[in-house]
Amino acid sequence: MTKERRGIQSVEVGAQLLEVLVEEGAPMLLRELASKAGMTSAKAHPYLVSFGNVGLIQQDGATGRYELGSFALRMGMISLQLLDPVKLAIPEAADLCQQLGHTVGIAVLGNAGPTIIHLSESTQPVHVKMRTGTVMSILHTATGRVFSAHLPAMLVEKLNARELAAQVAIGRSKEKVTKQKLEALLGEVRKQGLARAVGEPIAGINALSAPVFDHAGNIALALTAIGPMGTLDASWDGETAQQMRQCALRISQRLGYRL
Image 1 (cartoon, rainbow, N blue to C red):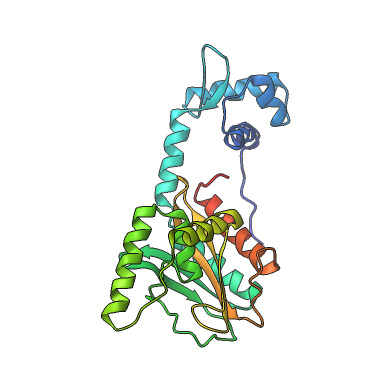
Image 2: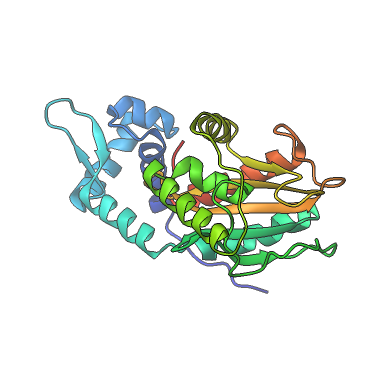
């Protein structure tokens, strides 16, 4: 039998006050803080004094409100620096693949554009040339549209121009997206919290892509599910879309992102 590890109950009780401060994200009065932590002000106060002595909290002398202290902030910054978004996303992508029954890819922004760096492949493979290292079209794929919706406009224009030039160089061309159409397309992505590609750029194939954000609100990576039109529901309010939003949000929150 596994021996139960012995803890210190008072530390766990006091931690409830810190958790409330983190969740509220704003300075709080003693009575409000204690109440939300499920304790009396008299019980909470000694904990706050000790936390203040080690820099976990601080009290504003003018308002009397408590907030996280310098040591707590330093701990948070170190924690964020140690987080690896891709490392966190890989097991989540594998679970999502099992839930959906479709291949799920992880993409990050590379020098040439959104690039697939990991694939959790379904037992029902899709005959699409998507593998690790594949660079996705910035405007003509669900993955690219997710990045386009959350990257600076100038960077999107630069990546799109490079992509169009590369297509011309090999004797191909893609439909140029007008500014009006692009604004409508990316506005919908931001509104829905997802990007989708229905039967494009490959006929008969659907894709949904969800953004993962870091603690600063910047897009860190994208999760993309891909499958046949007959089995992958690409509707905004479908079960697939909901599961993808939830998965992306879980990873984002672990990276310190707050809605």
